[in-house]
Length: 363
Image 1 (spheres, rainbow, N blue to C red):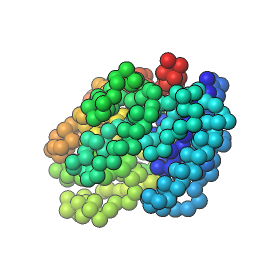
Image 2: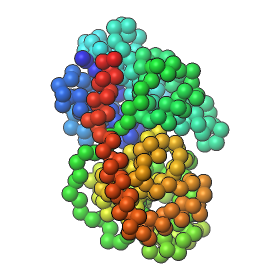
Image 3: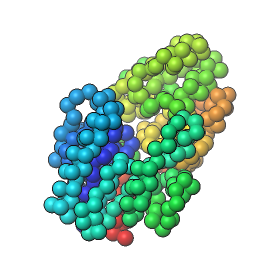
Image 4: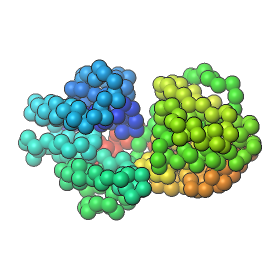
């Protein structure tokens, strides 16, 4: 079987869960000698550069913030779309797995191969009346109609997809994501106890509620630091909140996967106050390094964390505070969650994800 991935996602993000997903699929397919490739031309993704995959095209050699300009992004997509059509002609795939919802589909001989798309979340649709002011769903509708089959990364994502779109449920298959299957020997970065937050902090990520929750507790304020990994430097709104809540021990850092994994390994707790996630890869990464997890009781998170995490109401800073304190204070509870998280982690792997995806292609 020949499988071709376009590279739309690698124009739309520098790093992120979807990039990691497609890179790991390609790696696993190539390990079993499946004829697999990513259509290559231009990309932004550091994840793609660091993947070890060959023939991934050229990284765009300018500040990635320029990609925010729609005219430039559209031009790059057109170039890559033309390249993908050429590779369809030459490679003759059995399956084309499109990696994002941009309004570029492939019409040349598209009756000769099957089209698959993965849906990661319905965040834009779910929060359209709050965080998102414009309805930009037409591209997604076209891709959903274009696709012969659809993969959802959680049961919750499938439920939301059926809620927002008129989709034949028979087209959909739920396939969970995986996690890095090998631990890295890591040095400790910080010599103080800390709570770890990972990723972007805007809008539905609910970081402001976490700051409020920490401010409630003298135990948390005085005895633990908060490390925000990734997501860029604190903006003025966040700085004002930190000042308002009189929080002294809060730091933002960036770094590669090695640095991130060190943060997981030595953290007292990973906290995930998000209002919505399509899956929640940081939970599995925390489990891998036996880091206790406190997270929101919503969307796909209970599917992923199972009995391995303590849950809170993300809209209630007092509840967030109480649950964080509860797990940090009790060594018995941390040990209990550690044992449950080890069992939960066995349900996921990139090998399992790739195997189920390959079987879905064959079907």
